Image (cartoon, rainbow, N blue to C red; front, side, top):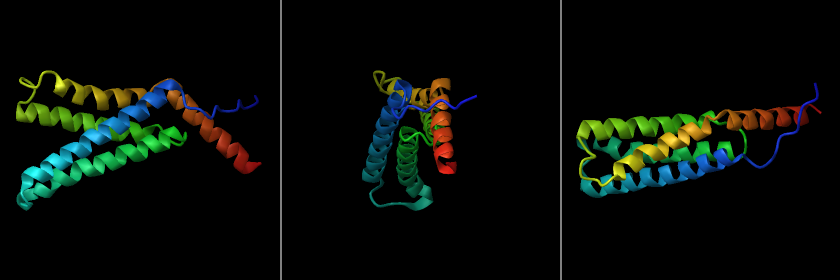
Length: 141
């Protein structure tokens, strides 16, 4: 069975997932700046985690977005997007947020969840597998 050459251009769901990852990373970085502003330089009792975690998640999301965009990995974007979604849901429920936010919290939930779902769609996974297969076949040839 001959191997079908992979398209260079990512499918539309992958491009939308990359856009979602960039927006989620920007929101995470914005949260980190807000946490830094409210910390007043006091990092005791693990306060530095509140600042460092969003920055690391934003970097992880951007790395995953790049890897998906070049066809290397879909899982590298799905995992950090799912982690951000889980943390946002946990933080919202634990803090009792959401009643007076006029739907902003829903955006914070939908963006990473949608990014994770789009990155894991079968068409995106097939495209990444085809890109990997094409890369392997050219390396052997």
